[in-house]
Image 1 (spheres, rainbow, N blue to C red):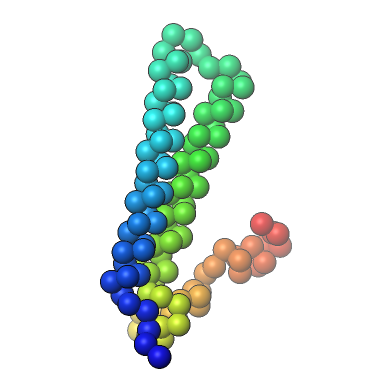
Image 2: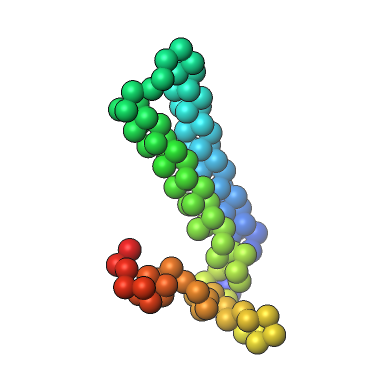
Length: 111
């Protein structure tokens, strides 16, 4: 059985990232439009919460891009074997010395 086609995987990744960048561009446009409204008067608390929601949308969009790209930078598609290197401390995908899941359990947090 042949493995996944690297060119096809790269094309799919590029399409996914491009799609997310398009969504991010729309969010930036919404923020710019909102900020233009506040040139004359300070935003109300409700308007500030709306801006915070847009900032959140932007942040989560960037996070989606990183979550999608990071596995490819850390060894490629799942199922590819990666050799551990004791010299660099690399342990392959999913074997980080520090992970948010592990850190939260070390500190008693459930997030």
